[in-house]
Length: 530
Image 1 (cartoon, one colour):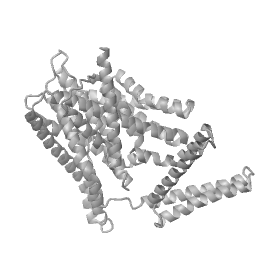
Image 2 (spheres, one colour):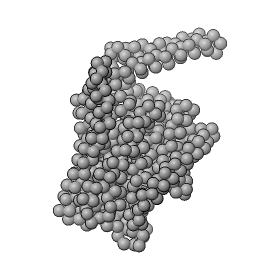
Image 3 (cartoon, one colour):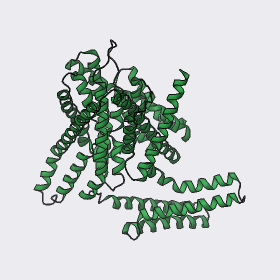
Image 4 (spheres, one colour):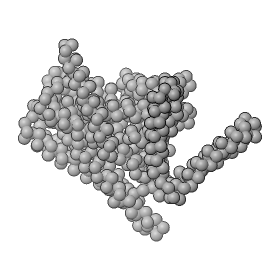
């Protein structure tokens, strides 16, 4: 028993090591890291060497979903979410239900001997797009914030709606009973109860962290918040998914308005790393589970199921495109009728194509597939589980590779960019510099800073203003400036090590000076992690 545990642990560590390398390679070649991970999962799944790592499917949703959903809630712009709630809910509720139904029908047509609840569970599993995979690509371009918010908001809400449908389908599958009236009542209770738990837990836990905890301890505490919220919701038999999402939205607002800068910096970096680890963990599990399945399947079965998965992927993209274009048709024809808004026709069309194409699936779908039970309550094997997991993986692989690798080209072709973003940022930054200079003069008038200190601070912000003006008019590029700054800091760091090696400074001085250089690079940290 002990040897088996050690073998499993060693296998897991080696696979996590390989997954981390895949993330690094993905960043190097400038592709979304879930693409690299899904290819790694495929490599594990189709190797003939049996690893034999087992896991409890009941724990998958509990371990993986709460932090993933909590993190997603912090990533979204709440103000933009409120402004675009109609578009978001159309995709996150209407499209999810429609997609679940149509894909469920197709699945049952392919496998008529498998029960309808399993077919709809499959449809719910592959309904929610993955925000991490999509936004990791889109954030490299100057895309309209509205588009990013719609895609992030859709992913956040449709995770909740798809998982509620998934839970209902699994319950019907295991019990063999389905009542529309009872399901509707349970749905309303589950959703409203989840929202209530999220509001209460969010207010209590987030304000406790804000008032009583120091930044480093607060970040550690933040990792427990989604799990506590999710478990409380489960005990009350309401939606843990919605509870975590609502809690995260409350936390995001408090983080922006009330927490210190050190808390935000520590929190964002720690959570970025944790989510990468969680993605690695899930893709390893799906690879191991896929390997177990492929060892029991013939080549003909794998080819057939892959063909079915391709058909479902095409149907999924067609459904999404049709839904998005139907929703955008009104805006498009309205723009056609107005001479003033006529120029917006191309923008509406381009944004619709982008939203329709950016439907990559990822970690939530994988987690839900892995959480399917092995057996019925009576102990008999759950027929169709291996087909569902295999096909979900192939659908995710196709949805990540095809749209994921073509999105950058599509964005360049459509010429979708935010015309007003640079002007708005310039205006806001200029106002920040002006208020800084006024504050300096006020402090000098109160004699809280000396003449020399006043001059130094003014010179610092005057330099920032000059850099801002030069980048705004295009005399210098902000990207080139950041790249040069990075090289300068790199050379400073080399020189610092040389000074330390000559024994001119001790370890404490080295650490202090290193931290000063680290602070200069802090604003580039999150960019490197995406």
